[in-house]
Amino acid sequence: MGMADKVRFEIAVSDDFVDPTISAISEGARTGEVGDGKIFVVPLERVVRIRTSETDNAAVTPVGA
Image (cartoon, rainbow, N blue to C red; front, side):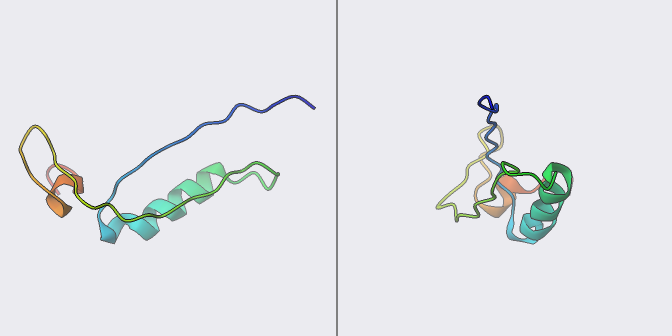
C-alpha cells in the first residue's frame, strides 16, 4: 500500500457558521475508509480583514452577508 496524498484546509468562520461548515466538510469528505480525515475546531484570538480593516466577527463574515 502506497502513501496517500494528504491535504490540509484551514478555514475561519464566525460562530454561526461552525456547525454548518463541519457538516458540509464531513458530508463531502466521508468515504467510510481509513484516512477520511479529522476536523479540529480551535478559537482564533483575532482576525483582521486587510482590505477593510474589519476585525473579528466582521472579518470572517462573508462579504454582503
